[in-house]
Length: 75
Image 1 (cartoon, rainbow, N blue to C red):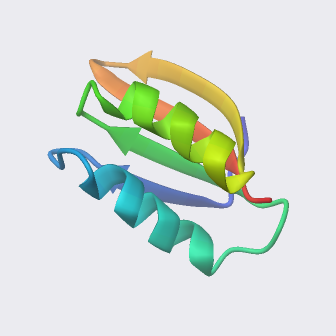
Image 2: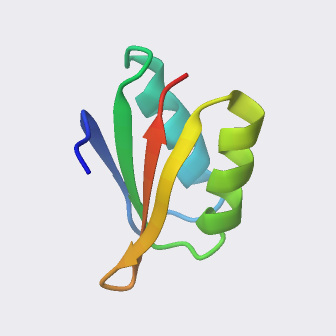
């Protein structure tokens, strides 16, 4: 999947992956896609909740090499 920007949250634990994802989305245009890579297992539930609460669409949630990868489309 194509994306416009990537944020690596590896090594960060809750709530930092979500806080920094929010900051990464702030300077993006509506419709652009952010790829987030995280190592915190809690980020799976957190990212789904963040997406629902903010209106940003969680396009994909997968794992790659033991890391969690999320594709978020900015609202």
